[in-house]
Amino acid sequence: MEITALDLGLRGATAGIFLMIVVVLLRIRPLNAPIRFAVALSAGAVAYVIATAPFVPKTSLWWTMPILAGNPVILWLWARATFDDDFVVRRWHGALWLLVIGIGYSSSLTWTTWPKLAQAGLRSVSLVWLVLALSAALQTVRTWRADLIAGRRRLRIASLIASLVLIVLFAGSNLVPIDWAGGQAPGGLATALGGSLSTALGMFVLAVLGGLSLFQPPAASPALVAMAAGKPAGAARVALPAGDGRESIAPLLLRRLETLMTVERIYCQEGLTIGGLAAKLDLPEHRLRQVINEGLGYRNFNTFLNRYRLDDAKAALADPSQRDVPVLTIAIDAGFQSIGPFNRAFKADTGLTPTEFRRDASARSQTSAPNGNGNLKIGQAGREIG
Image (spheres, one colour):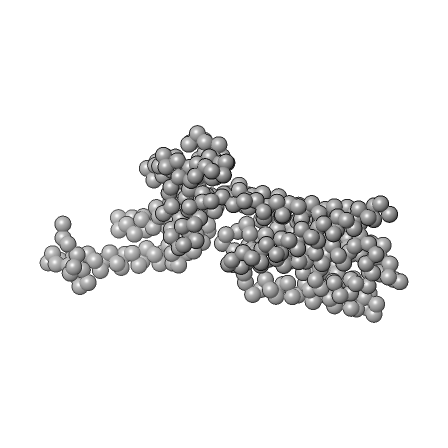
């Protein structure tokens, strides 16, 4: 009974923390995609800890299964939207969520009549869960080093733990046979959804990690305020006050970084990492993250580097003297390691492919060039001739 009481207490505390997270998130404006997914994920966690608690009839799985089945999809979408600044919600994401819920619900309804078909449906859902959990974990780890936001880096720990818990409790156990005969559930899904103390403890840890990440006081960054007002990220290059206990960002440090990027063009260095750039500035890595994020308004180190690389590439593509230089050569000279990432970043920044940008720049250059009589062409009458 002591273990059961502890189990119920942990579940109650977990549900309370997640509900508090939901209330806090719903008060944030605007309600962007990461916040919406976080609300859905927290609400799903509340449903999970209640539906799987001791003394809750296992027959409740018939109606809670649709909710629980969609949680791994929500976790994956939340990880993508939170840790990938370029992520865009697509219609097929919603279709995947509805498909998983539909299969889970159909399997729960047909278990007594077509047990083998229902078991096959649950196993297929489990495989989808496993793939999504691994993808969420990979997304969390893959972009960890480039993330410049301190609170979001802490949040990645909760995301990684949640993905591992999902793999062990949800997906892995569902790949073994399930027997619901007479309402008993010795293995499989019901084992994962059974009111075990370890499951309650794991969910409690996730709730605490999520709460700590959410309620961590944000940095009062003038750069982020400027970005929210629609100003460019580089417009807020000012020192931060040190009233919150953190070191202020001195203008001299920002000028050192700007000189390193624009004069020495260190962004062209192959395989440049934030650790390498910090060593060049003789700064701790966490300090450089603060400088770039709070002083310049960048959320991702690769985005910061690509700003200089893309400006370099655009200048080269618009240069008539480099008209015959291959696009790949320009991309490599600017610091990109391959043509694929360069093309994607260039298209996202300009809306054009590098070839289209070069063609338009060439056309504008020819239009603005003086004709053979030394007169400017049409459209250039107001331009001074030095």
